[in-house]
Amino acid sequence: MSSTFLFATWAGGGAVPPVLSVARALHRRGHHVRVLADRSLHGEVAACGLEPIAWTTAPQGDPSDPATDVIRDFEARTPLGEFARLRDRIVCGPAADYARDTLAELRARPADVLVAEHMLLGAFTGAEAAGTPRASLVTTLYPFPTPGAPPPGPGLPPATGPLGRVRDQIVTRLILKPWEKGLPALNSARVAHDLPPLASVVEAFDRVDRLLVLSPRAFDYPDRRFPADLRHVGPRLDDPAWAGELRLPAGDAPLVLVGLSSSFMDQRPVLERIAEALGTLPVRGLLTTGPAVDPATIHAPDNVLVTAAAPHNIALSHTAVTITHAGHGTAVKSLAAGVPLVGVPLGRDQREVARHVEWLGAGTTVNKSASPRTIARAVDRVLRDPSYRRAAQRLAAEIATETATDRAVTELEALT
Image (cartoon, rainbow, N blue to C red):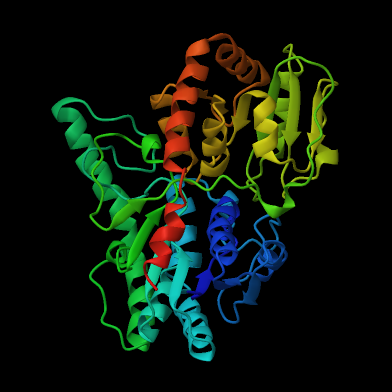
């Protein structure tokens, strides 16, 4: 039977395609789906065959444009500064606005289920006030501390021995404490909608009927123990609607695919150094700049083709190595294709993703300030050492098993 789903998302760069992939899959199953989203995403929503709805009081932005980006985390000088911007400008600060818009939409046109990107606590608040079942989509590795793994975020290796356990206890407290500053705004939004206040912000992330992680279980630490209501439902491997057609550089040398963030993270200098590095190697480079960087501004050698976008899923079938900012989407797509990586984390969750790639033996990491020579050495090492590709291929087999059925859709349909 057909059901009605209201999705809610924000202009969060790589978090958008997996959310829309789930929405599109439900639409194709015959369900009615509409999407509350920033106006900058409406073209992408419509390209998926879905109905876009604009936020009216919640923040509006375009992460590919530094002038209109809401969180502007590229201006932060520290990881804590990055986090504070996300907390204050998306998760907690405007929670009342997201709640008001979500509740208004549900009252105007009720839905059987509200499905939202996991950072939109305000949207979940509005749905809770409406009495609508709620599902949270985590579009990366589960981002909160759990037993059996190092605290996520800083990209720490697994702890060993008593000192390692003490390290994890201290870092866990340091990670959770900054959330406290967002609690007054979140509770204000809840009280305004006749909901009881909460003891912590982290508690709010679990107040849903389904907590679905769109990441391979095989990509996380095997001993990590998750909340009982959490389900790993596998990654979404679709390319975004703006990916365009594939054009490969000429020749038959090994192909290196380059893809950094789809949102603005001041990445143009990094792209320049990557292009210069590839110019010193016997490879072909396909460098995709994404919407935030004009490809005409990248000076590249003759063996590197620079383009705004390309369908990575198709390109990966030709690729020997991917150079990426270690965004979850690009990293997992590469691993699903059995392609090893060189990670160049720029911020956000990328340090953690890069650490998991390294821990699994499927790639290596260089600093975002690395010289072209250092980048070239990393690429050459991954190309020459077959253990990296073998590890990526092992992960590809496990990801194929996890994605053989669409478990996200099954879980969401079970809520109706």
